[in-house]
Amino acid sequence: MATIDLNSDLGESLGAWRMGDDDSMLAIVTSANVACGFHAGDPAGILATLKAAAARGVCVGAHVAYPDLVGFGRRAMDIASADLVADLVYQIGALQGLAHAAGTRVRYVKPHGALYNTIAHDERQARDVITAIRAVDGKLALVGLAGSRGLALAREAGLRTIAEAFADRAYTPQGTLVSRREQGAVLHDADQVARRMLQLVTEGTLEAIDGSLARVQAQSICVHGDSPDAVAMARATRRTLEQAGVELRAFC
Image (cartoon, rainbow, N blue to C red; front, top):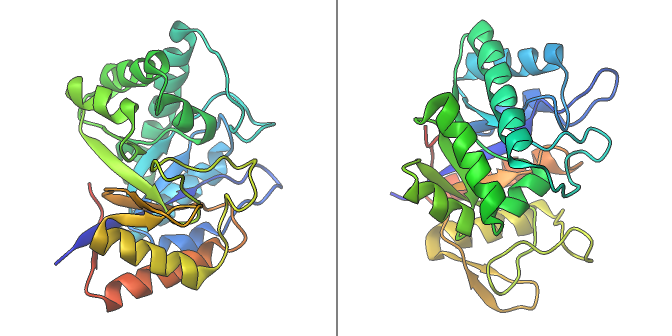
């Protein structure tokens, strides 16, 4: 039987600003990438999300980011290595403390937004992320873009890696994400998304934005929690996969 993890970015509300529907998503996903306060999230909200994840037995990871609340962590930053490493250690450590208070633990690290995309090809920042994870706990897994250079470097450094695909994003023929600045980069149709993810799991391919087939080998599927269609897409994806005999199971 084929198996796959289904994850979402959660804990991203900030004060009176509500982002996503964490309770509904936690009833669907098997892993939760929880914000650490640098791109989104406040301590009380993060703690509430962690408690809800613990109650449902959902695996928890640290969704670390550049210090960019205004840009939601989606603006690329040329940060000195010493600062980036310290920022990441700080975020992972903060989430570990909150997770302990919630009765769960952090099992993996997944960079967010621009940091995620940068370490897919930038060796210096990728090594900074690896250094930070190893400094905190070398047993933490790194979740990253399937086929990326960053994941290869992490494996070489002895980290466990989880290759990820995105349910709600368009792909290039090379198997990379289409920039959010381009038309059609973000998908919204739940049934289309579900069919694409079934093809990913069963055939290892996705239809690229130009109609060709891109090879994508992934162990986890992400549905972005901030999309207005997130819950519908996650629910349709889970239902379609399970009906096809695919087991939804956390990688941790």
